[in-house]
Length: 338
Image 1 (cartoon, rainbow, N blue to C red):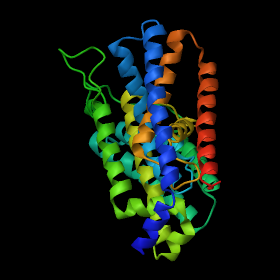
Image 2: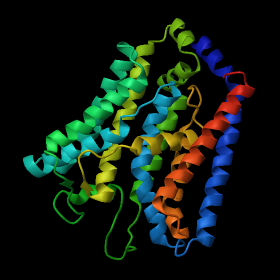
Image 3: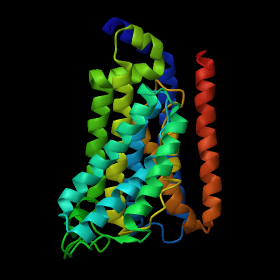
Image 4: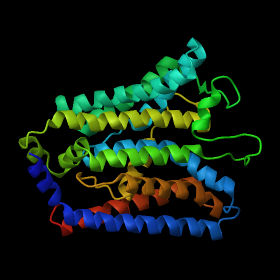
């Protein structure tokens, strides 16, 4: 069984090499973008700007890490954006209305995200619904659920110095004697979890099986692998990280509005694809995903510094995504995979 899995992955060796080249291009693009804004963006070259880039990358980064596992299987998860906000809305309401301790709320938010991911996994792997439809349904459910639980009222999380606000130090540490913009502890957490997930994906049996699902699902099944189990696991991981993304979003932006979160998933998926993960499945890396996320964050933060209006930011980001997907398609055509 292991030999068959290994052979399936070896068949994609040349494609992996091509994707590696795409990752290198992404790294160069990230450096060039940052230097461009550094030299031509008015007031961009500040410590506070770096913090702004990191602040805007945490929630997208966590969602992107999670959804990488789903995309590698050849699936998609459109629910992570609304799940992210829904998890924080529900747990924030439990904190403000029911007096639930904030540490419990943080853990509950992550577990609730995992529950949404489990529901997606069951619909896709057991009920055989298309991932697009299943996760689109979950997107609508979580968007509505957040509004119902909060009665359409905004939820405000406590400041760092207030009771229950200590969780913010997970993402930004502020104290007398430190820079006013704070210390980006969230970046450390993001890197630690990214390394852990990279090890899971590349060095463990579940990760290898998830990769093989995207390479050749039928061959993986015939090799004796429980396809439903590992496909569901990929969605659970995506959900858990969506819940964590909700915590980071609440820590950075404080106030959450019901009915929001739509579009977050597109930023996360764009980061994954720009980082070299193939939408056709079977190929991808967590390192590439982080690179793609930071490209998105630098674009989002840097464009206003050169006078580009918000609606043009979406236009430019869209072009970047289309180019990344086109490069993936060309790579697969060259290897006879498309």
